[in-house]
Structure formats: C-alpha cells, structure tokens
Length: 328
Image (cartoon, rainbow, N blue to C red):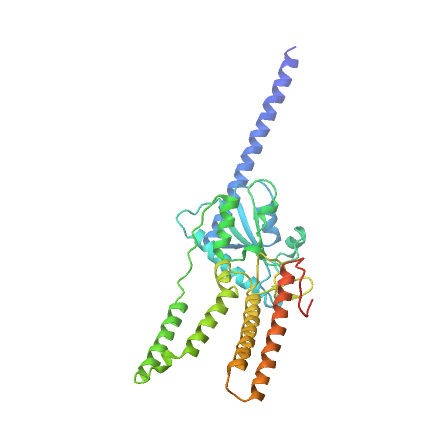
C-alpha cells in the first residue's frame, strides 16, 4: 500500500527535478549566448556571422534578444556597389546604437556575407543582396520583419525607424562629421567673391538676364528630377539582379526610384528644355532664315524625342497608363 502511494509521488518529484534542471540549463545556455554576443558587439558594432554562428546564436533557442542582420555580398568579385553603400549606412546605425548610453543586449546588429555564409542564403531561400531581416526573440520572422529596401532606401535614419517599429528600441542616428559640404560651399563662395573682386569695375554680368535664366533653369531641373527625395530616402544608385546580373536603372514602382533614374530624368528634362529654348530663339531671333530653320528643326527633334522617352519611363512606373508617344 505504501509503495503504491510513494511511486506516483516519486514520479512527480522526479519530473519536477528534471524540469528545474532543464530550466537551469536553458538559463545557463542563454546567459552564455548573451555574454558571447555582448563580447562580439564590444569589438565590432556589426557582428560578422557565418553559417555556424547564425544557426547557434540566431536560429537555435533559447534567445531573448533581437538580431537585425544585413545579408550582403561585399567581396570585390561580386561587384555589388549597392552592397557597399548599404554597408556604410548599416555601420552608422550599428555604431549609433553601440555607443549610445541606452545600449543594452535587447538588440544586436550582424551581417552575413554570401562568400562566408552561402549556406545561410540557401537556408532562407534568399537570392538578392543587400537584404535586411529582423529575427525576433521568439517565433519566426514575419513579413514585416523584412525591410522594404526598394521602397524606403537604406539610409541609416530609415533603418532606425524600421528597427524601432520592430523592436521598440529608439536609436538616435549620429553620423561622423562630414566637412565636404561646408568646404565645397566655402570654395564656391570664394570663387564667386574672387571673380566679383577681379571684375569690380565691370559688374554688368550680374545684371545679365541670360546668366540668371540659366541659373534658375539649373535649379528647377535639379529640384524636379527627384534629388531631394534621394537626399531624404537614400535609395541605391541602381539595382543588380544577382541571379541574372541585369542592372536596372529605372525602378519598376511609382513609390520609389533609383539615383540613376533621377539623373536620367534630369538629362531628359534638360533636353526638352533646350528644345523649347531653340524653338523660342528660332521664332524671335534676328539671324538669317537658314539658321532659324536649323534651330527650329533641332528644337522640334529634341522635344519630340526626349518627351517620348520621358513618357515611356512614366508608363514603366505607372503600370496601366494608356498613353504613349512614338515609343511604347
């Protein structure tokens, strides 16, 4: 009778002891992983991972910390210029977090290079770089844990907003001081001031309407081509498909653009503007009729050709737009 009562009690105590022992092992393993991650982060703000490190410190439980990983291809033979640009911004973000007073073990930043962790790319069915993924402390990454690079760009500020949305960790991005802008502005002002001083006895050029008209046109063309959007969003210059090697200079969405795209639009708009100017000059100039005819034909050609190209870019970005001109 005593044995029948003691045996179930023994099983309960044994299972409780095993559970406590398993919990202790889990806590010990977690503590070791956090300690190791903190040690790596103290040496490099962005932890470099290969397949083994990824499986042990990111995929395998237990884990009570988030990991934001940039999957990239930085080796020269990969010829991924966008990867290098994205890496610079990712380093700025990671350094801003690592050296802030709010730094904790809640979030770590890491990168997996294709040549060091191709098995990780295969594991995640990943075929493009750069790609940013957030791995939450519990559960698998959801769709929102993949950063929309083509829409938001890879500027550190945009990445910080995404990290805050996924982890509730606010990171104030601090960039190294860049004196290129002030130096360039100072040089430009010095040149203008020097020219004005040298021609201080003849400042008629300041009242030349053509100079001011050209300056105004340059400013308008730069602003209307999307340069300010590039400055705010920090998009890549272009996109190279790692599978086919094809480079895209025009973004396929109306919600985003590449830097190269703004340069193309700027040149096309400038060509159309030049065509309009030639037509105006042909109509109002006092030169002989032969030159006016040449100016008229050249102006019409520039307007027709480059406006057609502009419209084709618009059709490529706004799918379903029904109108075209010369080119489909």
